[in-house]
Length: 433
Image (tube, rainbow, N blue to C red; front, side, top):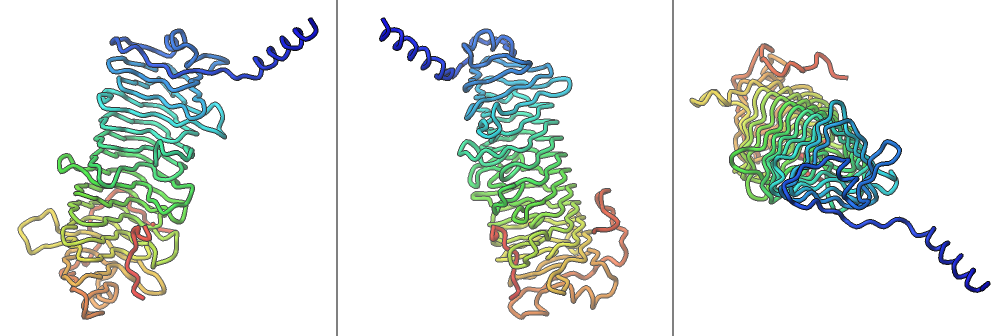
């Protein structure tokens, strides 16, 4: 009897020590609409409610044809390595906010995966923190008015706060900050053309890896990738602003953005990139401080099929203004052709390092058009001194900068500041030494 009591006590002790174990739960795929409370009732413990919080204890799969809606203010706490896998539709759109956070901020969760046919999904007024990534796979959904912060879980699940794979999503009006590496990223050879509009993207890449805050590869021909109206501000010295390395082809419109205090501003690398870089403020991208490793306002490094039109930009306070490498063929202003869409109107001045001004550095053997721009002065000899080209080295092509603007009557982005107080490249702007 005593032995039996000991066995029973040991068995009870083991039962107490064993944690709750859950299995993944899939909604049945019967074209039903679910909310959090119905998931609590039918998920077999995968979704529970306690102390005012919904707990997602194991991976939740929203099956094709099913919809899960979260339309009230709520907090969801996800367990270690848990993610929500969406094949149907997930709609988060509360009056104020839905917070997605970790049950344990030391172990963290993975995040969301939106698959093909989840295009009707919406993430709106959602706060996501202490996870890994929102992954979009063949999914053209909406992510709007969200806060995506402090997602520092190191996992192969996703490489960026928002990881894109063949997706033309709309990513708008969000605050994306203090995440592990990039804020938004796609594959180098996987064509994706989302619209990235009116976001505040700042202080990402807390690991200080050699990664920009928007890190892009190939795009579709139509529609192009659109990066418009964003504020992109850096903190960590190896984090650049926007970089595109397209294995395939790239078509991008980058306009009306404010890009400040990064390792570099914009870098377009490789060839087959058609870009319009229009009306951006590219200011003080110099935080690494090493001109041989970064610091260009705009860096263009590729072959003759790298052909961006660069117009109406305000480029100031960078270690280099515009650097051109390889055989890239940008157009910074050509008033002699019939096309009036490439008439320059950039303001490029006050960029430099090691005691010298470098507003434009043409490190290619070809001539470059950069007409009808304002260079911070009306004196031609001073403009010439700020542009590095054939007159400085016989191996380089000319920069055709005449005619130039003689007054600052160029209408640019309303955010242009009155005063101002970052791929080895990975992108690597030209090192004149």
